[in-house]
Amino acid sequence: MKDILSEIIANKRFEVDLQKQTISLEQLQEGIGDIPMARSMKQALSSSSSGIIAEFKRRSPSKGWIKQEACPKEIVPSYVAAGASALSILTDEKFFGGSLKDIRTVRPLVDIPILRKDFIIDEYQLYQARIVGADAVLLIAAALEKDKCQQLTEQAHVLGLEVLLEIHSIEELSYINNEVDMVGINNRNLGTFITDIENSFRLARQLPQDTVLVSESGISKPEVVKRLQAYGFHGFLIGETFMKTPQPGETLQSFIQSIQ
Image: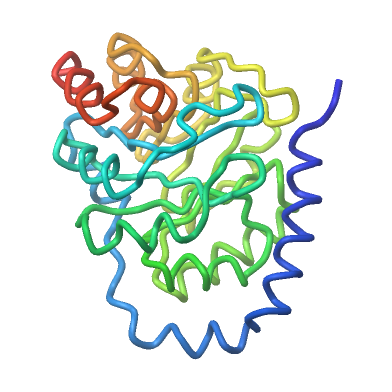
């Protein structure tokens, strides 16, 4: 079976190398100084009754286009109005149809934390995230060596970004340390893109109770969120469930009402 993650990472290395040729790391570093303080996604999730991280996503490798003409200026503010605790915005172009411009576009329009969701493999991408207005970044254990993941976590903190560390298996528990702000359990295998919601329940038992836990992928029913909350989850990253409907913000509002 084709390993989709390996294909994505290979393409990401190519992309980042091209971007560095256009704008150097030193140029990005010079642009950091005037960026406002980031918002705390960890705090937002810990204090929220719903913990919904509403995701803006146009497509996925497994499903193809979900909403090709989706406009971030319309959908993202509607998520906030509906009661989202935080936002996740896909910035990978080739496989997910996103861009950094999507974050830059909505940052002045919303005042809750934004997660840059991408395949972060280089500190260059951390500077990009900070400059466009992200408050947190996703680091994927399956895409990084442990030392590299630690290095990127430390650099993210230097830039004022929080880190959502994504794991999928028991073997990746060793990536977790006290510096990680939040731990995400991905219910989707990034190699095969097969989804199993029970993965969150299995791995949650292995983590300390004070961990800010986020369940990612495959969540489509409020009843599942309630079960996950009982297992200690604070955050629930949901995209396709909302994005595939005509009015994602209204769908989110109904979803939150069903939880509460």
